[in-house]
Image 1 (cartoon, rainbow, N blue to C red):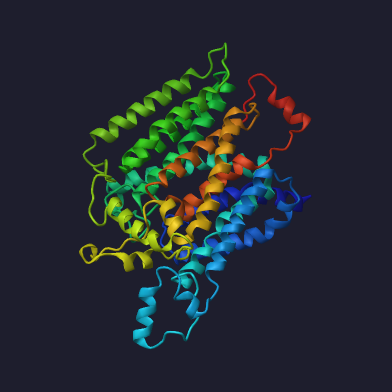
Image 2: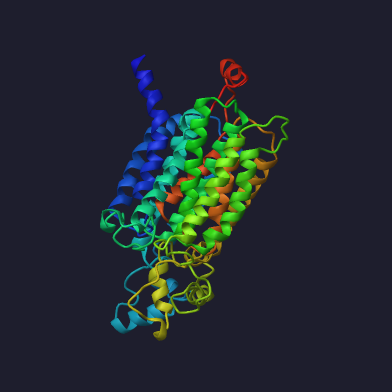
Length: 468
């Protein structure tokens, strides 16, 4: 009996704890960090423990399709690491310059080389698949009730916590010593992330979950003291996440905020008309929260990061400048790619003399362009198939019959949509923290929800019964 309680506690706590750990330790996209190695080791351990229990659960077709696509990406990455004969490698597009350098050094033809320009970086990047996949397996093993449902509170709470930390950073609490990463946007509200744009993405992804909680509360509203307290808590979570987006100063974050807020309204209201007035307090507090956040950010002399992400600059280190060089890379490497994790090294080969500075470009600031650079056409086709799978899941989630988990699934779909769109001008999913949140959202979308017991169904049907 005692052992069964321990197992139940493990499956109830470990998914939320591991996701929290991924977000707290995975706020930077810089590879080969100690924090990333810790996540990879912990993920390997949890995946080993969870693999057999996960295999015993019913798997949906979408889960199988997703795993096939992930395995295909990992297989192609492994193929990029296979050593090729020097005479074959030197004939590939874009390798002539390096081959000439070897010839000058007198080492041409001595060593086989792979498709990847930097095999060590590719192997390191391949290990980055581990923690998100471990979370996938862990949530599958835990199931909907014990694994997924707690995330409905954990996700908006983590977003609110990061937003609060960001505000403390810019208000000078502890003399600015609250920045988590050494290489970061100091003076801006980065929260637990190294990049202020990723902070905006993270808070934006957490917003729909706060709205989903508000919608569930509205559905069961009877107006007792407990529900009023929950309404205040949910509104505080919503307010803090909204403030995190507004304060970050990301233009893309501002542009995506409107559709996220519109879809969040549907999460609060639901799509079926109701004859009763329910949860008016939730609407009022959310409206006041939005207005208050906008006024605070717009009038504060300290939050000067508004619009720090500019798309009008055309300098060599601007997004347009980076994309121009990336386009030159694609002319020679779009077919087979340069290897996962090699963008920085390859970019240096194509920079012009006028663009060389003490700064260096670590990503393309467009994940889809970078996917084409690193994985080539095979990788882009696999990612395109994954996006088509998401579109199918998104449409099905918003059109299907409303079951007990529909608001949570819709919140996850909005969260992933924000990430997919933001990736057109940034690289948020390359941070383990946001990758973990994205994986959690995907599992929420595709994990089958087991039928409730007769006791649970009876409780759900009681008037005024609140299940959050």
